[in-house]
Length: 220
Ligand SMILES: [Ca+2]
Image (cartoon, rainbow, N blue to C red; front, side):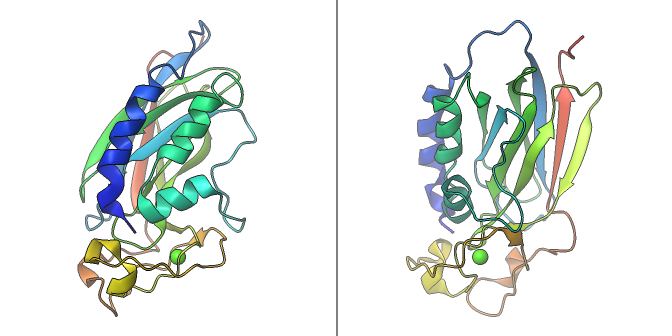
């Protein structure tokens, strides 16, 4: 958990994204609104990408990739955004970065989708967690004719043990990190039994976020 590093990393990523997308007359834009439902957790920067079918940012029960690891542990969106920029026109169609969200808040980004890159994925760190995150993975946004709302649950990147001791919580000044087995799973929630205050608690059985995708120029 290194939420305090978010702002600089996010700012550095913006200029590179401007040229991430070549003009494509078959493409159209979608609006993506992401909202915190925990009302206790600050959300990190939220990278969103459009991509080909078959590509996943994560899958529950499968090994965690570095892009999700650094997002979930540090709130660092640049691995996800960098892959999209480098792969624009190939596996990726477009990339956009959403700003951090304070507890209970929401923000919106816009993204290009096209027939080759119909899927949209994006995620954010649950800022007051060890390696908790949430988001959407591979939602077909190209063929939407009406807004689609998805409620998402908290996930554990499986890369850092959820110790909640201050030595392992950068938000509390800790710099240590205890590696975990590296498999994505549902998050068990904040226990509040160590140094991480229970005020960051969320119910892992309930959605922690809501994502609404709205087609702005529906494909004909
Ligand atoms: Ca963990």
